Image (cartoon, rainbow, N blue to C red; front, side):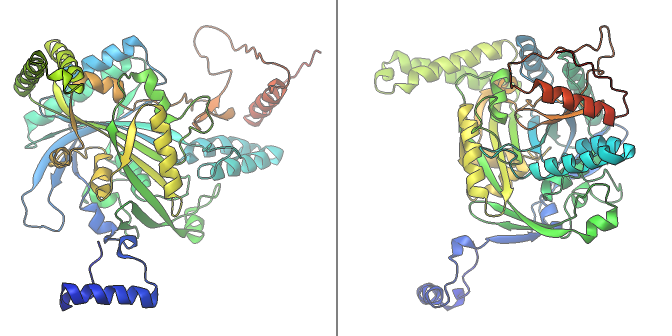
Length: 536
């Protein structure tokens, strides 16, 4: 909260003068003023990343409480992967992910799976538009107008009925362990990373190690929000701490009880603009970030069900209304602590049931059944973990209330009950950043009651790995998925066995002819020779 300007006069006198001042000058109440304002440099002290070991591909964290330069450092090491989002999930995918989380993580590891519905669609749009611009003429004009349509659609709905925004779904996975950064620890964590990459390849998707220049670029886009669709270019200076390279100097963060406000200078994003022209047309923009925490998880869940958390396929009212970050976090207990706590809770709840307490406490029976199921999972290799699920809802300044309500509705349809994390938005933001759970952050969230004990078998069921189909190989047809994912489609993507024939089926008036015209125009704009035989 903002300090009381009359505080030196005593509590009673100060309160009366404060009320009188508000009555006379119509000053906003204290709750509507930021409790704290931070510049980019001060805010970067809260970020975990410090250094990078290029030999092993491991990040080194060194945390110290901001504002307490003499406090003890809390060190840790970790890695970050970018994972190609899943589209649904089979039983085989579920089984492989379960084995990966049960057996692949070292003791006391902190793991995060982070899903970002990013508005930075510039690389997809510009690659497509550049192909047409090189052709010139009508194709260049079409590319210009099409790019502008989707550029506006990154922040303004392209549908008059409901939210429908263009976006690019990205998924990150990070693993961190506290402790010293020595050679043995580096090698052990590098082995874990390779095992994870191999597991994702087994289920038919890809995971890539994220070097510092790509991590910095992604965090610059997330922590310096703007309406620009252009991604930050990858860059990394090994002589400067990584956290200092992620937040712009002209970014300002205001901390309110019910949200965070980010203000920064945003360069323009005109097509084919030079850097100086983007700076010339830049402007200062303000955004609200509202942190939500999951109070109640679904009773039953799996990766196929998690597709509902990025929006409904068929209900237009259940779509994400803006850039959204979902973070599933868990902090592992040791094998010994898992075994002892599981046996104690299972025996204790069963003993309570045997004494007839279920008649007085109906929920006790379900608790006993849950701990019996946990004991069964532990016997098959699972470990206990402190688990949490957090969501960041981003909106232009003044639109936060509407966006928050819409995000809650989307997650409610997926059976997640979200509540705003008032007075805790900043630590929740940290929990939604890669490698953000170390340095005691997991203990802080556990002390707030925001983490629950669950077995690691829930991780592959609740982790937000989902996205929409996306292809970026051949910039022929430019399309969007039902949840807004930008993608390319081409009949010539098939490079394996088979042919390039396409059959389009639809009822009268469903858009078959429009689709064929768009495909013909797109292929011609990409340099193909198009021959149309219209028979009937």
